[in-house]
Length: 589
Figure 1 (spheres, rainbow, N blue to C red):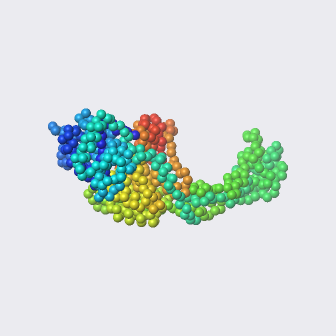
Figure 2: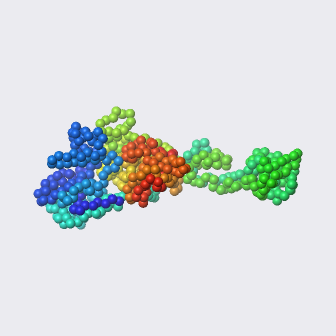
Figure 3: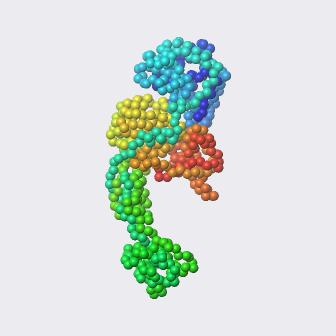
C-alpha cells in the first residue's frame, strides 16, 4: 500500500453529504489566516469537474488532447491533469504541494482513509456516527451530544472549532505524518473478499428431472450410479483372434467361430481353439487374449500368428467387464456440469433422464438518473446502459435464469420497492452502480434497512468498490458502475458465488502461466487485472500482451481480449519475458 508523507500537520473533516463541510471550511479559513496559519486544502470530488471555463484558451487546449495543461499568470498557476484510467491518490496529491510554504494541510473528503480527522455531524441529516468505526477521528463537532470520550465541539461555534484546529496545528507542527493510504479495516484482498462471500452462500436444494436431450450444461443434483458394468462384457479391443492366455505356445489354432459385434460364441474355448472376433464383441469363456488380425494368417480353419514381429502377452487387447465403470460405481458426481462426455456416458448406461438442480434465478438492475435505455434519444449528461446487457450475457452463459428489472431511478422509494420485488422472485440480486465511496447515501440506507450489507473496498484494479450481503436472506451484490470493472468483479466474485449456488463445490476458473511480451503496470500490494491476448509464440510457449489502454470505461478492450492478465499482490512489477498468470475468458463473457 502507498503511504501518506506529510512533513506538517494533516487534518481532515469527515461527514456525510449535506452536513456542510465546504461551508464550514469557507467560514473557518479566513479566521485561520488571521492567526498566521498558511493552509493548503485538498478536496475530494465524486463527480467530473472543470476548473477553467469553457472557451478559455487553457480549456480549449486541454479538450484538444493535452493530458496535462499548465497555466500560469502573475498571481497564480494551475496544473490540470487528465486521469481517465485511475483517480489520483491522496499520497500523490500531498506530494504535489510545496510543504515548505505551508503550516497545515486540511482535507475535505477521503473519509475512508487513515489520517487524523474531525467528524462533522448534524442530527437533521439522519446519518449514523462515523467515529465508532473510525479510530482516526480525534474530535466530534456536532449539534448534539454523542456518547463518546472524544473531545466534543459545537458545530455552530466557529471560533471554538478554529481554536481546536490551531491548537492541533501547533501541537503537531514538528511531526511528520506517515500512515497507510487506506485503512486496513476498509480494504480487503481479492482472495479474502471471495472467501467471505462463499462462506455465506448456501447451495440451492431445488431439483427437477429432465430428459437427457435437455441436460447439456445443467448441474447434476445427485450422484448418478452405474446400473450396469461398462463394458458389460469382457470384449475385444480390436479386430483379431481370441485365444486362451494359458495356451500361447502352439504353432497353430483351430478357428471354431467368427464373432461379430452384437453377437457371441457361447461355448467355453478349449485349448488349441481360436475365435475370429471383431472389435467390441464379447470374448468367449476361457479366452482372455486377442491377437490383432495383421499378425494372423488363416488358411481354411487353421490360423497361425507371426510372433517374430511382436511378442504375444496374456491379456493383451482385451477390455474387461466393468473396466470403465462397475455396477454401483459413481458415473457422474453430484455438482458436475454435464458436458458432451458426461452426456455420452449417461446415455451409455441406458439412462434417459437425469435429476438436475434448477437454474439459479438472478434479478439484475442498473441505478442512476444518468443511465438511459439504448434506443432512447440521448439526454444531456446521460449515458446508455451497457452493464445490464453485459451482465445478462454473462449470467446466461453461466446457466442462470435472468429477471431484468431495468433501470432504477435515484430515490429511496424506487430502490426499496425494487429490492423487495427482487427478493420475492430471485435467488440472487445483482445491481451495477451506486456502491462507490461518496455515492448517494440513500443506497447504503436502504440496503441497511432491508438486510445486512457490507461495503467493501477491494484491493484490486479495476473494480475496487463492492457491496455484498443479504436482502432478507437473498444474496445481494452491488457492483461498480464502470463497464470493465463490472465484468472483472463479476468474474472474481459473482461467478464463484453462482457456481456454489448451483451446487458446484470448490469451483475454480482455469488459469495458465504465460510469458509477458511487454512491461505490465502494477502497484505493489494490489491485484491488477489487465485485458490481454494470449497465444503460442514461435517457440511453442504461451505468451501474452495487453489489448492497449486499460481504462475501466474502455469496453473495446474487453471485446478484443481473450484473457485477463492477473498480477498478484506479491508481484511488484512484470518485465518483458517474465511469467504472469492468465485467466482465459472463453465461455465466460
